[in-house]
Image (cartoon, rainbow, N blue to C red; front, side, top):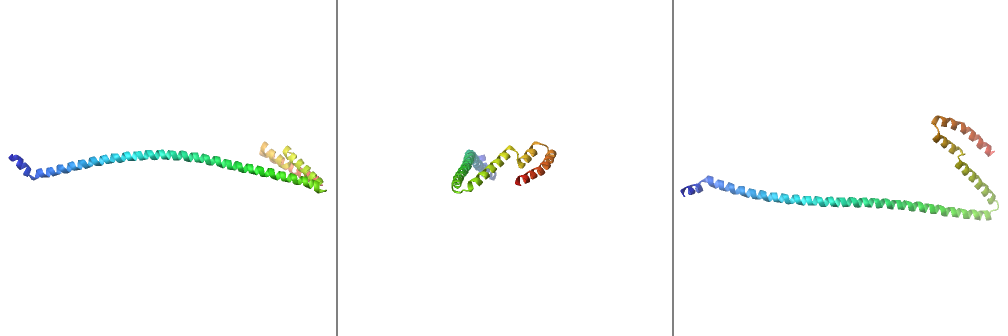
Length: 169
């Protein structure tokens, strides 16, 4: 027992005991910290998973909204085109009725109007047939090589201008 008393009374024993106690406290604190870190990592991974799900849902919603926006934009443009066509049809009907009224009410208007309509019809038919100067030029530009086109255009220009001058006389 004497040895136990001498060991207990030695300052080394007390230093060792205090050091061991502090080491145990340090290990317990380390274990708590590890547990807390593990818990926080779990929370973080859960949060990231939730955010990833929400982000994918938001991307899907954004894509759906973009598609809906495009569809609505196309519908609006279609409505504008339809309203333009309807407005043009209405205006054409108004002009047709006004023409009929003028033909009936104005004695000299009918003959001049009919001549103007015939001239316009002849001009439109000539353009559609490709007999007018601009159409011939465009056909030549897009159907043949550049050098042949330039030569033919230069040759056709004076002929066309003399033909037009003869028509006016």
